[in-house]
Length: 143
Ligand code: SF4
Image (cartoon, rainbow, N blue to C red; front, side):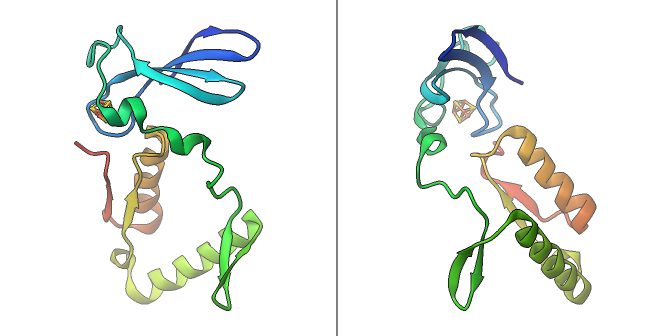
């Protein structure tokens, strides 16, 4: 859940919930020119009353990192090569299908990420349980 609380042409403040663990601390995130500039505790949050741990307050540098991968990569002849989303998703569907057929759904395991949103973690669990057919799903953000 996110609530935009203040905004101008170039900056806005959004109240949201920290996704690093299951405690559910409230964060007040300031975004300027589409980049996060500060994260503080949300005093109105009934769980955390404005407090955060260091992960909630400081652990967001990766969001603006220029080291993030923005294009799918497929290993070809030992080298990672840029690929289209269609090519990457077709390859994943093919490989997952053949592995599932040969070894069964419990051959898979998924370790989701606290750096994803709560919604993406929910989708990862749904995907593993309903599409792959396994309960082998975990994440570092469970408390
Ligand atoms: S990681 Fe820290 S700030 Fe985030 S929800 Fe957990 S205790 Fe709160």
